[in-house]
Image 1 (spheres, rainbow, N blue to C red):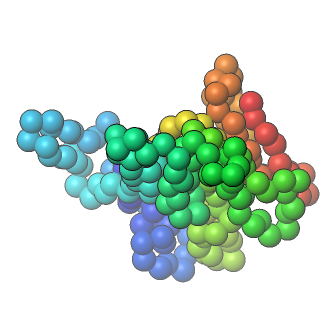
Image 2 (image 1 turned 135 degrees about the vertical axis):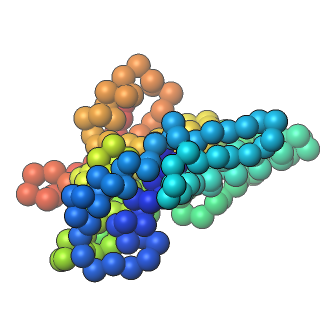
Length: 217
């Protein structure tokens, strides 16, 4: 996960429309101006400095989760313990119960061509974040590309269509749902080894482009 992917998002046509695929040279050049290690934070001055000309920060994949976490913390300061914070279709945090029910209920999104065995997610003092390549896309030269870009390769090349992550920290959930979508199934499995507090659901393209679902860990 890297918040300096702004130039890559722009390159692939998510900030302004383009009709052709980026060239190898364009991708290589843009990768030269990405990398979180090129951000300098100054706590005393409360400033952010980007070391390379042309760098851009894109907080998609973290801003909602951070906001949900902070709002939930503030509600608890006022001894409000039963609540649901919904930041749109991708990030939800549920605290306590919803009155008559022990759990709050969230629902997985509609995925064309796939039917979930159970779309409901039961939440209590935890959150769910959903990232996916099923809605935000660009079409370039008759190919479909997702807005989730691997910051290491500079390309949107994962075969994962949707990732849902459930855990107590809404910011971590949002970051990881984005990262897992870019990493793919095998790298996600490796990352989750021993981290049993996360519950993960992934929809991906299997053999013959058939959609499949896996639950991890």
